[in-house]
Amino acid sequence: MALSKASEIEIELFLEKHTKWSIKKDKLSREFEFNDFVQAFGFMAQAAIIAESLDHHPDWSNSYNKVKVELATHDAGGITSLDFNLASKMDSIAKG
Image 1: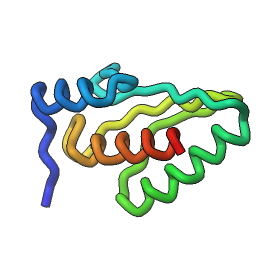
Image 2 (image 1 turned 45 degrees about the horizontal axis):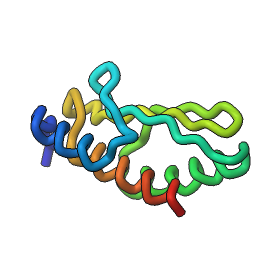
Image 3 (image 1 turned 60 degrees about the vertical axis):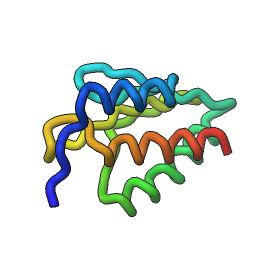
Image 4 (image 1 turned 90 degrees about the vertical axis):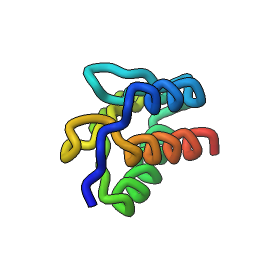
């Protein structure tokens, strides 16, 4: 079953609950900051396992203690519930 793009209202509701995320270039975007490189890399390793289990892979980059993440569902041409799900899981990992 193909995923459909989220509506503007669905995106706004997500952003209200997940205030550290924003929309940049039609993607969910967030920069995570950790104490050091090891924590940042550990976050990426945990997120990678979840992303693989969802068969949904983020566009991301790492520079020392920062991880920049952009999420969109390429097959749907925009943000979907899959992106909301992965973003929420990343938030949970970062809090841990």
